[in-house]
Length: 237
Image (cartoon, rainbow, N blue to C red; front, side):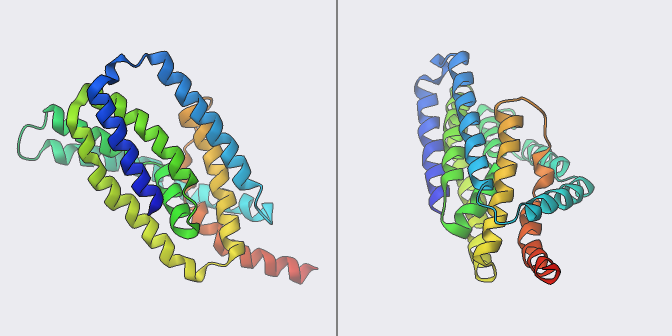
């Protein structure tokens, strides 16, 4: 939960700064910051992958997970979830077009829906390593600054669903730690590293569009494959 709490604090800091003077932030500064975060995320992803003990597990997990994700259309589902949330809020009582509602909704979708949210929360819950959520926190802080400068105080209230949603994922991951061995966690982390590389290339550096969300099943498949591949290699050897 540590990473999620930090994430909430940074969103509040960014939101307050945005309300105060966010409109003065030049676009070129924002682009430079995002590029720096993209490069940092890329390096972190490579570092995580290098912790694998068996690259074959990572490769198979990515291939099987990617095929499963495409079949389930996870990326489309995440986008559809955002659209449904927007539609439901817009159809509720009160003024759906108000700056408060639009600020809350936009921030909610941006901070809570995405591969880095899920990956970071799992990493935090499993190992206590919240470095990924630190990266997300910096991203969210600058996003909150930009959003609050135009959409107002509603952005600050997005920290409530962020805390509940991201925190719940971390707590669920922590409970799964009892059945995962150190080797399984290492391979899951390596897969997560590859997904981070994809996220950096796609969303942050905007080099190539990659449907990273569709690879999320690989995080579950990797620990399942780890003992199977180890047993197979032992039998062959």
